[in-house]
Image: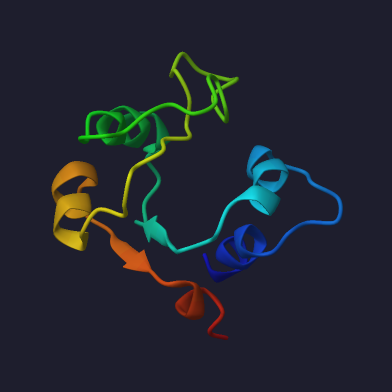
Length: 102
């Protein structure tokens, strides 16, 4: 998990995922993580899109392999941990510094 966080925190010289292309234009503020085998990105994208003020800034971004409108949701501010827990279920918010711990 830490390696994935570090990957998304840096600006890649040779992008190899959708987020790498976007990364130079945004700030990395942290990640919501959970552990398990179930793929949750489809549920999370739809659940986050229902939050007040949310929007799909780039249609189909990160969702070329599914029917989701996108896997990138813009929010006016970071939801509280409680709101994320309520919306996304079990998990935790990791600040960038935690992503860099060895």
